[in-house]
Image (cartoon, rainbow, N blue to C red; front, side, top):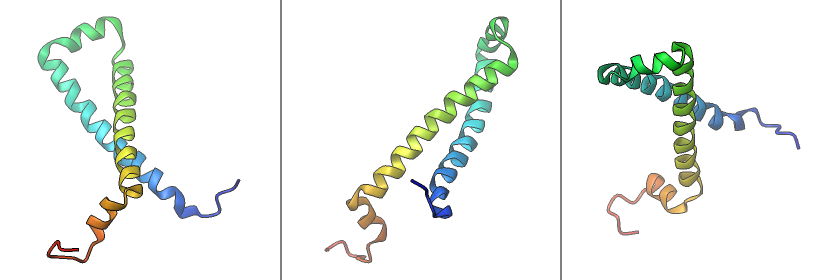
Length: 94
């Protein structure tokens, strides 16, 4: 089966980029926190700096990807949520 529509890949690309941006930010914050708590020096005795950063990035990327994809799937297939976002009823009676 071939996907003939190029624009159908935009949701997965946007979720990946969104997750990657949050993962990079979360990685920087976690490394600051680990440094302040004194955990980072202990981790450096067992792992390399690149290994720690890469492992944190992959874990956070997967976490944010799963959350973002779950929210996107829920909003796409939940008719009630779609009606809330696109309803023209301003009084809430319908």
